Image: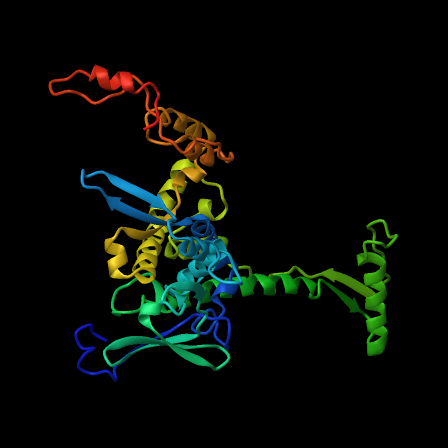
Length: 402
């Protein structure tokens, strides 16, 4: 559905089907993609990191002299909305839930509930099975179908919509099902091969050949039972020695169970890791500082930026945005930095780059009174033209508050 055709034919619609946990699919549409341990381990580091991002309402206003004033969480109702979006979950848990839906479907939807004055008062993730996009009187609506057979239509202006692989469709992100179905079939087939190999461990391991042909079937079964009980049972008193008479000959059968090739299985899992933009070290939390920073910048930061832009666009009117209101999600890759790197942040305090409480936050320490004020060393000042420092300026900066 093209953007320019929406005013010509309102009967056109765009559809999107979610990956859910119902149906008879096999890691495919309506399959159980999230039930795969490989997929879940791929997306868990990302969702946990996105959940740790702290949502804040920022208002930037410019003064006549060109300076800028910044207010953090100036509106209590927005602050409460970000911390507790609904009665079922906190802001952190909702961010993790939405991040899971986004990773599995490349689309995630959050319903905005507004009060009688049009102000947002609730945010609810929408666990839909499929979605249709329709226009009514030149207004875009999304029609959500749920697993219980019910549906609802919501104006697009009341939905926070996150997308990945945003390519061909004007509204929805490209779903990952077609790209993943064959790959997940290979992973699942390998898992089933391993399960069958384990189950085959209980098949026949010994063969008793009786020389007499006059034994009844129940007699041969009894002889086999006694042989297993006397010599194959770990609790037997045979001392590892088996004795049989000339009536029977015991032969051990060598098992030839099929086990999937380990190298092929590893390559397939690595392809799944690559699809979700992760690797073995990230999945098993065996990364160093540089590896996590690379993963953060490639996989996490783009989603956090999209969340900030979409929250701002849907929670504030254009007039409010022009007045400097916006939503940000504070998340730093320094959270996962080594202790030596975190200790180096202390050198930023007396240069006005970071406050004392900002450094203490990365060290997992509680804030201290007066620690939110930026400090500046007294040997730091503005440079005059041609070099040299402004001495009068330096005298005023005796480790003073900015």
